[in-house]
Image 1 (cartoon, rainbow, N blue to C red):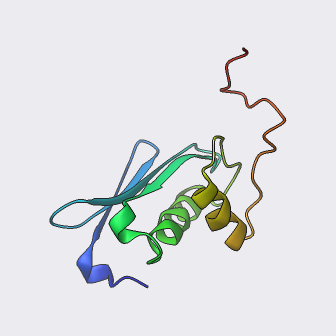
Image 2: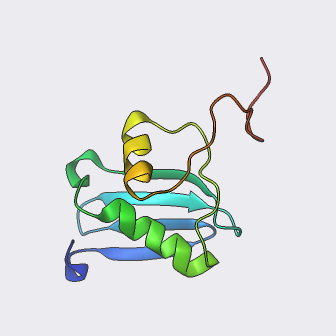
Length: 100
């Protein structure tokens, strides 16, 4: 797990941001219901626990992790699956999806 002295967490308007002196490490956009609209971790910092820290902050703020919004990358699918978090069924249109 990363050392908390090596990064800062900022929270504002439905966004959790993790950064250090040099760069943005990762961020997540979420709703008041705990839905994760977007999550990103800088490739140099992946597999170090920052994604879990982002989700922990969403859970702390909203009280839960709600729905995970599509699209979800293959790496994201593995990440959420390892945490036991259900993903949207790609066959079901999402509320934000545009009809084609």
